[in-house]
Image (cartoon, rainbow, N blue to C red; front, side, top):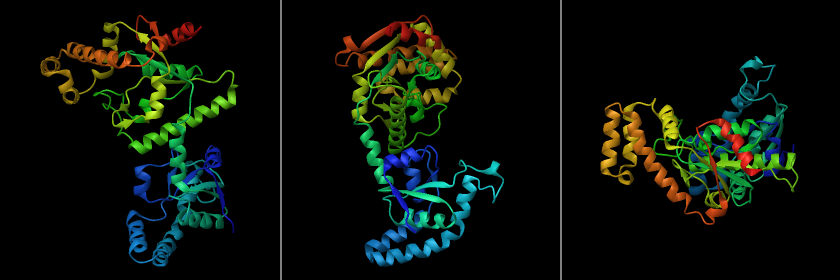
Length: 365
């Protein structure tokens, strides 16, 4: 029976309705994968290594034979595993399912070859309608990297540290704007303290995959709801090139730096209060460790003072030193932009408040 092999654009369109099964090895999946895909490995990491070694040191025929031996063992359980994942009502209580119930499945491996084809053949026998990705995960990666070369209509939300930019982005999204939260994708708030209370950061490749898919979704919304004469803007927070260990792709970051910047101009003391409420809850040891990350740039005396204030329970005084440091760094980065005088729109705000969102639209009007 013929297996339907589709290109990446069709694959992504169908992914809105159909589960994606990634049949690569666990190690490949853990390194990076298509966002939303579910791991259903055909081979273990060790089995994949054995097959690869046989291919290099012996022959393709020997490697295929070993792969078939492993596949014959795996096929006994693979279909049941997939049925459980998608909640087959004939096999189990549908409340235990993990993926949306569907009779159509999207399947991919590394290059769209034997692994995805074998799993698709097996699941087809069990009554599933299967589609494999032409070119596999490699095709998706090429597609993802191409997204960063495209031109987008971007608005940048800026402001000194403690301006409540993340909360404001959430409010902009709530009232119907297209928003991409880079810090959420990176699991990091962007400063030396940005990893506190966050999950582990994704690897660079996975971060790029997440961002590429968000840009694709934003483009789809643009096509769906807006004409070319009135394109939908994407709101992003002003970021350094790196958010923790996650690097924003250079071409896309350069677009961000060339985009209109709406700068929340909020008094220092108001921002200090916001920083205190956000980071003051963390253990002093964690805060000290974060301060030590910027010791060289902060300077020996200011580092000593900031830590001593913390240990003396004068947290606000400590944060005041740190906030002044980040204000200087942000101002330096801000005015290094080309054409900053034409890009910058300062929006005076008395406090850190999600209602500051309305000031954007008043400013644009």
